[in-house]
Length: 372
Image (tube, rainbow, N blue to C red; front, side, top):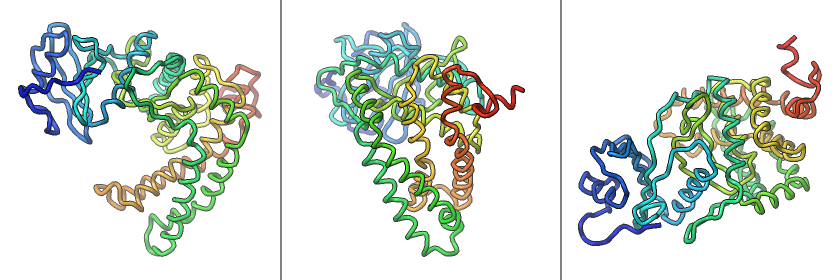
């Protein structure tokens, strides 16, 4: 980590830097800038496209603790060194991974072009799952830079599940007073089933396989992206390629898998059993999981994360720009996904067999009917 010089030449107290400040920042890097263009600035993050004599770069400013940003940049460098298809991180002239201010930091990396990855494109979702498997493999053995701060959720699953269950129970009491509110009416129709699934999932975390996998991940020093999104990927040379890395966490690999699968199915407005199975096949071919580890994934898929999230947004008014109609659209979508997921969750043995290349028949795989 390299600290920004406090020599009075420029101020970095503003939310976004002006052109002179950017010129000063770029002098810390072994590049010769030609032009700088603002790409976006929101939610404590600003990004510029920088044309240099060495090629096109992206400069990103994050209002985040520099020691935390150093941990993320170190993970980026680790993946890069392991040969992951990820934009090249550019070190400073003094070999630093980031430039650090008091409450923010900068990173510079290559700007990579390629085809946008879409949740509606089933082939691209499968390529993304293969990328996640590659990501998890490459993350192993990460030694964080000195002075960086690690973030971990790996040992906090029980606490997170309990907290979300308590939230749902609180929203249930609140919704019962909103007798004419259409969102609350829909919420109350589903909340008991969702609470039942959530409590079953919480009980399943006491499975010894959960503790075993937790210890294995600790020992391997692997990490997850934390909130895996296809928006940060492009398709390049027929495969997924990561444009930049915004966040990483020490956690079980199943977190990234669950988040992507839920996002894909939410876009489709239904749990596509065949696609879900094919996505897992593509992941497992790169980063195989054991039966016990897949059962933990099933537990996390059973927990109604999407239902909890939309209730949290609505009852805490987190999306002030959303209309009542938009909230209704989202909860209907999520109810459809969660309810159509049930059949998939009940067919673990058949799907696991198919993932591992076992004999596929009508009783063990959703693929059989469409192939016949």
